[in-house]
Length: 248
Image (cartoon, rainbow, N blue to C red; front, top):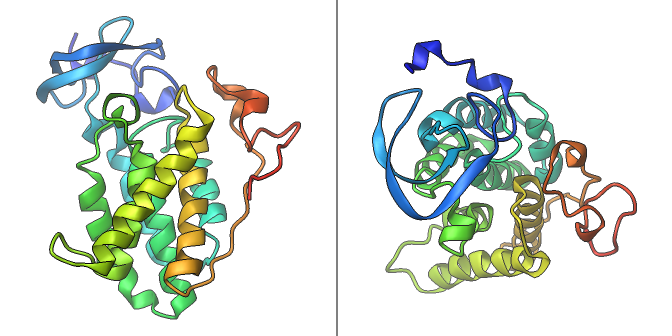
């Protein structure tokens, strides 16, 4: 089947972007050809009917939207900014676009709160470039959720960290570790909305405690639970009823 004969990817926000069938994950990667762009690469995921969509095709339009909105936004609440973007049909229920969403909203809110909105274009472009290297499924296969890594990308860019830095190097790695620890305590299976909010809230605390910048942001009541077949329900601090203490 050619890419032109497939249904539009935007029609399915959970499971396979092409047909909506559940995704099947293998322990080891196998050669696969993207049904949309034809790129060949190793992958551990494809749908039950054999379709494979590469990360670039999965999240390309969503990342462009995130970058555009965050560049224009005057918000200082990264949680609200992210939640608004999640409502857009370009952002799927799950996917690697969330790896960029975390640092993008944190950097936008941080720059706005500091009174330096002119920095956003440069910061967002670099955050997008770095997030592109965080592959889909890294939460389960690498033991490093891409949303948590996004918190580290934020901290790295906010402090100008490099591999040869000292304090900023430590802060960036500590930010990732802190976000991943928060995400890990709830366990799986993955939910990109849950992990994104947890990572952003961690970034809000790091901005206040380590960067001296106070950002707004509280844990929201999830609007997506009824669409997530793997929802932790009351096990998630953002589940709308009942809400559990500590989702701040």
